[in-house]
Image 1 (cartoon, rainbow, N blue to C red):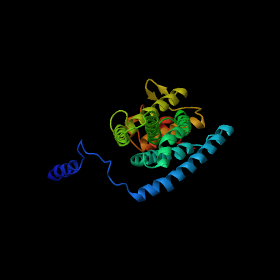
Image 2 (image 1 turned 120 degrees about the vertical axis):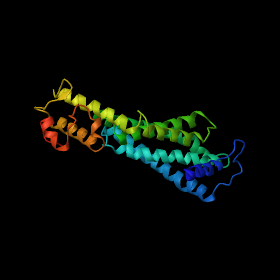
Image 3 (image 1 turned 30 degrees about the horizontal axis):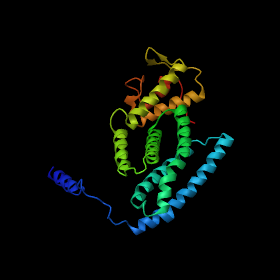
Length: 256
């Protein structure tokens, strides 16, 4: 307890006072070179590649499975971090100012494509923790970019503060990643059971003539809860175990 109190006091003692300013604080030359002459050109090239790739998707109408979100999410988060670090040198560097002014606008169509892609996955397979974080981080980046578009002299503090808030929301409370995912998967589970007439008076009855696709979906949902918290899965008997699957559902576990 003493260590916790002492450590917390030492940490808080380093927080700046309200009247302190950082206008004269030195800016690392190495960081400036890294951001202006390496990171920004790489982000610009990658942005061009994404636009070409997305035009191809729109022309062919072929959406790759789960790839678009991976291509966009971490790149957009890194871009938000770059804007954060560029803010102190906006007035002295023209390239930094151009990037800060135009990149948020260029990023919006790319984020829109990401949301369409992840929306398709959620519509097909429901929310999982991974998709939850994709959507949450995507909304955060979208909010940050819109903020910097609308507010000419936006405050940098908005980035770490809002990121901290969504981190807390995603871990604790009813809107946490697992709670939202469990609710979504239970909704899918209920819909699949009702579709195949396997839900009678709130209890599961073994299915007959269940399509292979529905068998795969039911199996994946059950496995999802088995790997996390089986008590959160609706309708299964309290004594249910891994080996009871065929007895309860009427078919062997089936995977794609």
